[in-house]
Length: 506
Image (cartoon, rainbow, N blue to C red; front, side):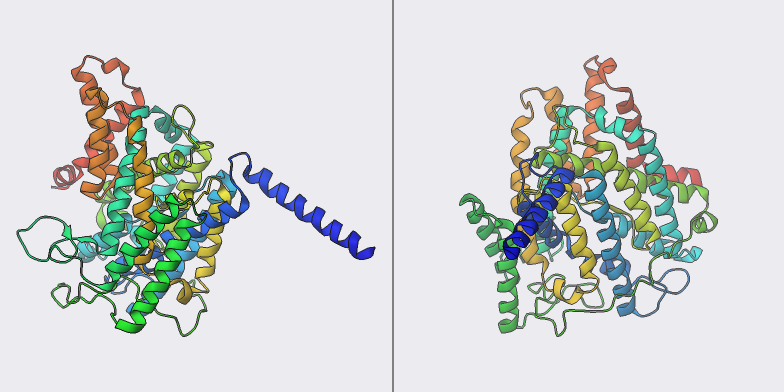
C-alpha cells in the first residue's frame, strides 16, 4: 500500500514537472516534445562543436603588440587551450540564456569572420603595439551599441522593415551558404592547388580522394535516406554513425591531420581537416578560465586612433547586426515559427540576448558571440523551442570538462548535417515571386552573394541596395520604408569602408 502510494506520488510529481517544463517552453503548443527538443539540442551542439577547435586555430599563433599570443601566453598549446575553454564557456552560457529568455531554438558561439577579422587586425597593426585585449574592448563597445539599438527599439524596427520577399531570400541564401560550408569543411569542394584554375573544384585536382571524404559522403547519403524513411533522430544518427566510421578508418589507415609546410602549402590534402577522430586516452580535463576578462575598453583608440578604431567598430556592428537578422529569419522559417510578416516570436528578446552575447564574447576574450546558422541542424531534427538551446548550452559547458570526448567528432562527420539542412532551407525558394523582376532580382542577389562571397552580410547588403535602386528606377521611392533608406546608406559605407578609411586617415 505504501509502495503504491509512493509510486503514485512520484508519478504525479513527474507529470507536474513535465507540465511546468512544457508550459514554460511552450513545447506542446509548438507541436514538439521534450525528446525532440533534446535531440535537436544535441544535434545543434555537434553541428557547432567545431568552433571549440576552430576558434583557437584562428586566434592563436599570431603574436600581438605585447609579444604574446591570445590569452597572454607565449606557448601556442596553452593559448589554444585557453581559447577553447573560453569559447565553450561563453557559448554555453549565452545559448542557455537564449533558450531561457527568448525561448527560441538557436544557439550562440564565437562568430566566424569576426574572429578572423580580429586576428587580421592584430597582425596588420602589430607595429602600433595593438593587443588582443585592445580589440576585444572594441568588441565589447560594439555589443553595447547593438544592445542600446535593441533597447530603443531600432534594431527590432529595422528587422520588421525588411520586405517579406527579401526575408525569404535571406533564408534561402543562408541555406546555400551553410551547404557550401559543409562541402568546404569536408574537403568535398576546395580551392584548387594549381594556379590559374577555377576558384573552387571537386576534391583534389577534380577528384574525390581520401577516406575523410568517404566519411562525409556516407554521412550525407545516410541522413538523406533516414529522412526520406522518416526515421526519428536522422541527423543525429548520421553524425554519430559517421563519427564511428571515422574512428574505425583512422585506427586502420592512420591518416592523421592536414599539415602545412613553411610556405603554407598543404602537404597531405587527403587527411582530416581539423580533428583526428580517435578514442582519447582520457575523457575529462580541468578547464582553465584564465582568458575570461582579458579586454581593454579604450586601448585601441589610444593606439590606432579614433577613426581607425571607429571604422573597425562599425564593421563589427554591421556584420553582427545583419548576420543575426538573417540567421534568425532562416531558423524561424525552417521551424515554421514566423508570423505572416516573416517575424519570429519574441524578436526583441532574441536580439537582446544576441547583443549581450557580443558583449560577453569580447569580455570573455574569445571574440564576439552571435547566433549560429548551424542551429538549423537541430531544427531539422525537430527542435522548436528554447529547450533545445538550453541542451546545446549545457553540452558546451560540459565540453569544458569533457573536451577530449567531444573533440573526437571530425568536421567531415558533422558537415553532412549542414548539407542536408541547406536543402531543407532551400525549399522556401518557391515562396519568392520570380516572375516579378522588381522583387526577383534583389532576392536573387541576396541568395547568390552569400555563398559566392562567403559572407551573409554582403548578401543582405547587396539585396537591400538593389531593392532600393530598383524602386527608385520604377518611380516608387516613396514605397521604400524610411529605415530601409538608412540601412541601405550604411551598407554603401560598409562596402566602401576601405577607401573611406584611406581618405579619412590619409
